[in-house]
Image (tube, rainbow, N blue to C red; front, top):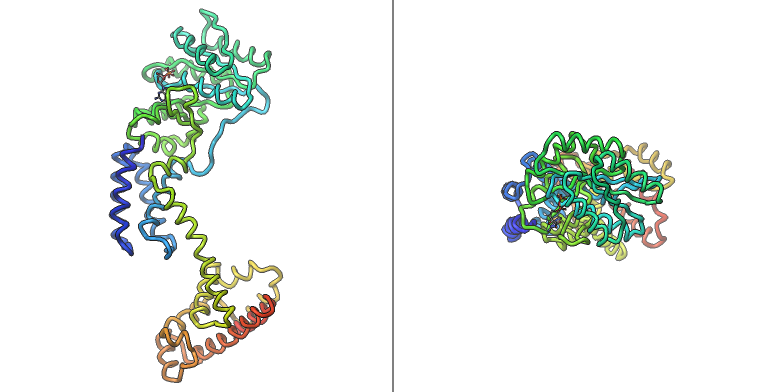
Length: 447
Ligand code: GDP
């Protein structure tokens, strides 16, 4: 169903992938193309707008992960947006009642695949060892009742015996009673559909919902009918206490936009996808799987997710290796300062460590503040590479130049250098005695 969209998006990402660094203009351009691709796939305009706004926010807000290509990061952002559009991480199963029988009511237009889906759900539930009763309330179409009885046979479950001449509410009552008396776990009510939305159908469905008070009221919609399916869902949702959606014909080659907009427009979770005419052709809906299928970039997404986790670990590993060799240069000090800031500044770092009230107080007394971290970072970045590696070469003239560059006075540069020497000593000690140097380090930081 998503092939055309998938192809378009692949094209967008391929064009990006040749570039090393992406400018804001590149990202804007890519997002414009993603926007067109979504609109062409028939995704509702407000849904597309929100998607693009959020994606841009993420693209500019996200920390740049150096170990992955920028284009891959754009893929990941698009993937995250699709997952969110489709309802996020929770895979919504069926809500089963605490006291059986659970009643599931099926609603939808005629031809949407409602009856077929009732049979598919029955099979699914009976595989879960539930005792299922199917009942057709379609009094106007005897053929629909027969169809459900046949589906019940295929699924290996019971269907309510047909009593000609009964009204739909009466059948619902009879079905509920049978289900209760005969110890069924689940009763599935297949309501009548019409080819178009009409008042008689709506009020009958609303009455059945009132009588049976279902745990699940599922709207079955044909994904191939595009935005019509979305409008239908909205109309049903206004009249019925819907709890979820089933999109049928996900195996067809429609444009898929209905499936993509449905959740955002109605606020209802998509619970299942109909994927074939066969009785077992029903998949639990999983936003990550569908987004992955659309992008066809599962590897990239996994890679970026892993890289985001790895980045801090990698930095820490490099640091540990250098430390083990007794090295602690100013670059490492700068990395540490920035790491501290990322973790929420001094407060954040200290908050992570147990029993540090005392250390915190010492730091406060020594006036170690986040502003100071910023100034220290500025001093280090005003140094040349050689100076950062070998601070010993820093003579008076170099110190004056650095102080000027960082907007501080020379005394502060001296303080930082002293602090660095102390930290280097502490680091050496720490690698030797396994981490006991924390208090010492705090003292060193206080200068
Ligand atoms: P109802 O009028 O809403 O009850 O619709 P039916 O259950 O009778 O389905 C109408 C037609 O759609 C039947 O031929 C089904 O086999 C077919 N159908 C239902 N669900 C799917 C699906 O997920 N994929 C495909 N390919 N066909 C389906």
